Image (cartoon, rainbow, N blue to C red; front, side):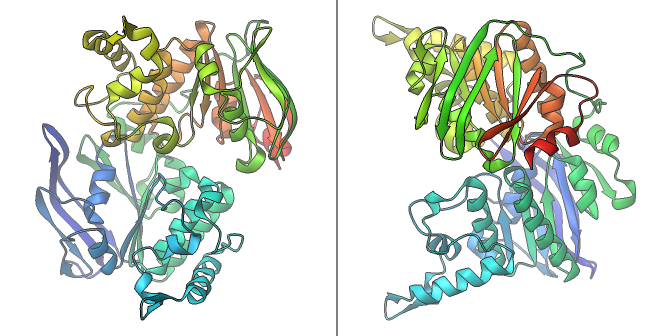
Length: 498
């Protein structure tokens, strides 16, 4: 193995039953390199990274790390070899403190005669948080009290305490706000400057080009290209990922927003947390974009409109008199909600595709107290086909689906129930360009059917590209409103966000 290579992956093969996840994959990562890994959902990125970090074993093939043969028994073994991974979805332990999360599995460092030295654990946690630029999180705080973004920063601190020689960053930037992304970018730059290495998995091609020294592209478990910094071009990467040309502009092509004057749902004088006296209306046949910084209150607004959160003041109404106070009332009034946090809120990942899609529709499927298997199967097959969900069968557990296919299931379960109003929070977070295009096409198709979409997004191009109207939130209040037009720019929205 060459002396400048920290990790060599040689002919790795992995299958799950009839599905070939990786087919003889070979690649190399150099010392002091940020190496990008990109591909469509289901291309094999997460499978490869999980093998490197010891979460699962390859069927065949070899790996070499830091000049030695490498075959990790498990994640702890990989950590002991100074290989750590930060994942996209939540990876913290519930109902314990921040410091307990940072040192989970390492409690013996602070134990003497069976007594845990919590003061020492606090000091060490504070030190590692400060070292990565996170000084707003209290080590003694319960992890449940933190936002999703801050819990992710705790996971980063846990990984960095191990002083990794190789850090795998799997779609992590998609769940961080700008401050969190900047912290992670600084960590990656610092590691590179010290001769350490990063495998950076991202669907954001511009981000990969900006951050990476080289990139490996996967499609259907095969490597389709390995590009150096000089050869990285967005269109070239897209073509290697998808196997076909994809236009830079996969948003709506019409330049003016259109909708009915009929109101689908309205928010009246709602206050909760940071939200203060919010009024807004979503019309039939409208895609209403909601934007702002992560802590602006926009994510809470979506939960309030679906009845998941009861506001301190105000109400949410459908029609002239129906108050949406619970998810059950929302579902009865044909409202669907797709959470930003797929694995923890949008899906039952330890249940099948069939069970997830059928759940909101059980009342409709029931006849004389019995739900027939053929009725369920017909409903699920209809919507998995319409949304082109890649799966082994409708009995496959959602935890084994790619991020894009999980998102399609999240949407399918509400469309199968006949939802007329869709509240979608970060609908394309962590999704490759191919599936992104599919979801945008679906949203526009729903609009043409006179259905209504409230799209909460942290991505300004998405807001501008898809919305008939955009409302911007700042510090819990509406700070600006824009109608669709060709002249609208990201800077116009940013001025009302910050």
